[in-house]
Length: 158
Image (cartoon, one colour):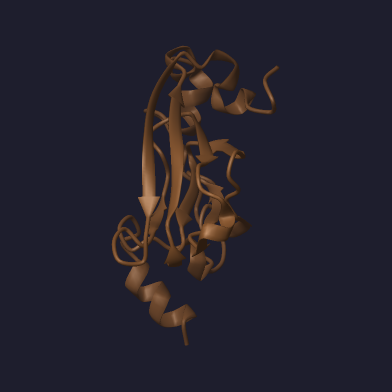
C-alpha cells in the first residue's frame, strides 16, 4: 500500500539513512525548522513520554508551497509509535524542558521518483517555488534557513 505517499515517491522507496537523535535541556535542546534531504521520513519514539517534557514535533507546510511557513500540527512523541511525513515538509523539534527524548529517524529516498518530471517541477532542478501568502507563523520560522527570520520575529513577536 502507498499509505498516501505517492506524491512523495513512497511506493518506490529503495534507500535509507537511519540514525538516533537525543534531546536534553542541557544539550541539543531543540532542532530548528527544516526540511529533510529525503523523500519520506519515519520518526520512531524510543522513550516513554512520561520521561520528558517539551520537545514536541512542530509541523508546518511543504517546501515550495505558498504556505510553507504556516503551522499545521504539533505531534507529541510516544514510545513505540512512528510519525511519517514527507521529507519536504517543514518541521522542527521544540525546546525540551525536562528529561530526555530519543527518536530513531529513518530518511528514505526513491531514486526512481527523483528522476521523474513531477519531482523536477516540485522539488528538483525546475522547482516552481510559490510566492508566500500572508505572514508566516512564528513557530514555523527558521533562524538557520530563513534570511528574513529577524524581520518576521520582530514583527510577529510584538
